[in-house]
Structures are given as C-alpha cells and as structure tokens.
Length: 335
Ligand code: TYM
Image 1 (cartoon, rainbow, N blue to C red):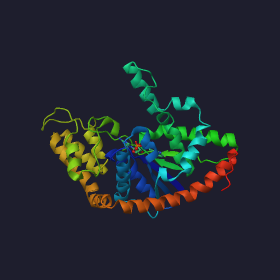
Image 2 (tube, helix red, strand yellow):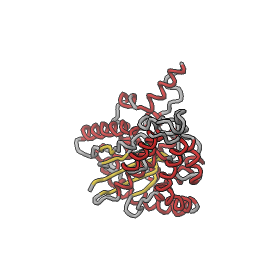
Image 3 (cartoon, helix red, strand yellow):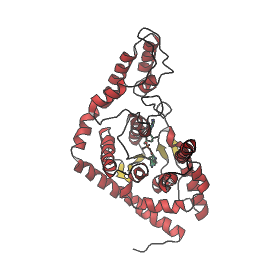
Image 4 (cartoon, helix red, strand yellow):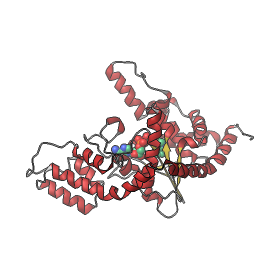
C-alpha cells in the first residue's frame, strides 16, 4: 500500500487554491485501492503566522468541515489535528538536532522575510521567529512520523518536501538504519499554482483569495466578480492564455469545456460573461457540498468526535514509532 499524507495550516478560511491544489487531489488519491491516507489540520504551524486564538480555533473548524464536505471518507482516512499528536513536536526536536542551520537559511518563507526587511532597510531578521525559521522541520516531522510515500501539495510546498528528504536521509545515515521513508511530492501541473484575484498566487498573505464555502455562494461569486482583467471590451478578442481567469476556469472544467471557453474569449466574449461562466462552473462543483459544510459548522461536536477518533488512529502509529526512535537515539522511555 501507498501512504499519502497532507496538511493545511489553520490560520485562515480555506480558499479555492487549497481546494484545487491540495484537498481535491488528496481526496481523489485517498479513494484509490491500496492507498492509506493521512490528512490533518496543521494547527501548530498556524501559530507561526497567527497569534489570534479565536482565528486559529475557528480556522481549525472551517478546514475540518471543508475536508468532510468535499467528500472525505473519515472512516477510511486518518483525519486529525497535528496538535492532538504530541509525538510530532517530539520528533520535530529530534529532527531539529540533525538539521543544519544552513539548510534552513535557504527556506523560501524565511528568505522572503529577510528580503522584505532588507528592502525596507531594517535588520534582516527583524520579526523572524524561530517558528518561522524552522517551519520546514516541523513539516518534516509531520511527514516522517507516518512514513508517507506521497505528499499531494501545491507548488509552493515543493521545496519543503526536498528539505524533508534531506533531513530524513541525514537522520537515517547518523543512526544507521532506514527509519524514515523518503517522501515524494505529488503535483498536478494544471492546478499547482492557482492564481488569485490579482493574478499572483492565491494566498491568505496576499489577501487575494476566493473563499470556498464561508459566506455561501454569494461570497464566492462576489470575489469572482472582482477578478482583475484587462480593459478589452465585449466584442474584442481576448488573450485567453494570458488571463488568470482562464487559468481558474481550467481548474474547474473538462478539457472540452476549457477549449470552448478559450474559443469564446478569443471570439470576443465580454469579461462579465466570462466571470459569470466561471461562477457557474465553480458552483456546479461546490454547490452540492455547501449544505454539508453549513450543517457541520452548526454542529462542531460532530467534527470534534471525528477528530478525536482520527487522533486515536494516528497515535496508534505515532506512539510505537516514537518509542523506536527514542531507543535509536539513546532515550529509551520506560512508562
Ligand atoms: P498551506 O496551508 O499554505 O496550504 C495548504 C495546501 O494548499 C496548497 N495551496 C495552493 N495550491 C495551488 N494554488 C494555490 N494558490 C495554493 N495556495 C495553497 C498548498 O500548496 C498546500 O498544499 N506547510 C503547509 C502545511 C503543512 C503540510 C505539512 C503540507 C504542514 N505540514 C505536511 C503537507 C505535508 C502549508 O502552509 O500549506
């Protein structure tokens, strides 16, 4: 069997990028024969970006409800919160002790923060916490704890997977056995980098996201209507390939539908009509999931019950494996 694992940081409301880049492909993968799937809420990761406890708590619920509404089979898949597995921060520490600082210096999120500070002419590490700096090590612990073979993610996470492999190899080498499987990234080129309203990567940090379920169909539509386009009028041919509206459409359409949409744009379809077509296309997929989402959000105790069961299942793997790792490094734990 192949083990598939992925997580989403609980620092905001899930958006179309999370859905198309991670949730949808992961659920599809989890339905395949001989796949053992682990999906989780990365709520320790949320603390790196967000010190608002209400927001973190709300986001944990929203992301859990989103996965379930999107069709996750919670009996088949191990579905849990990172913070319910205390073995993960424990493994994170062991990995911290074998990870070179130089490797972390190259991490995108850290480098971006340093570049921004340098541009502003302030201290390079201003506002950089140890959480942000060593974020890829915690992510490595998430993945290596369950010896995942495949990790479905968007393009922005590829570097973290490479670092995870580096860290795993280093640990295996130092302690003389193949404790950890080297994970592979699973990337779907069509949707690996879904653009947001302004054409940049759709991201909570850019405030350019299209919400999935929060706010209902109205909120999704209102966001789509704000997608930035060029000033070409109805009747004028549009550059479909150069427009992020077309990229978004493709993520929710069959190849034939996309062809027809492209031809219509090149034939002069107005941007307003194109946006309405995108709204319809997205609603055809998300519409049926909306009631389920609303129902779950109204019953957080049901979500809690599912996550408690998931944590129990995850710990059946994590507890004995951590004991084995403790022994390997010389920290045998006698309960
Ligand atoms: P996060 O929470 O930023 O994003 C969750 C998933 O959504 C994908 N994604 C996108 N895909 C396509 N287009 C976009 N615009 C877009 N925006 C986000 C991300 O690539 C990701 O797959 N560090 C991770 C969470 C994490 C994790 C893990 C993932 C923690 N531990 C272990 C996999 C395995 C993160 O912050 O993702």
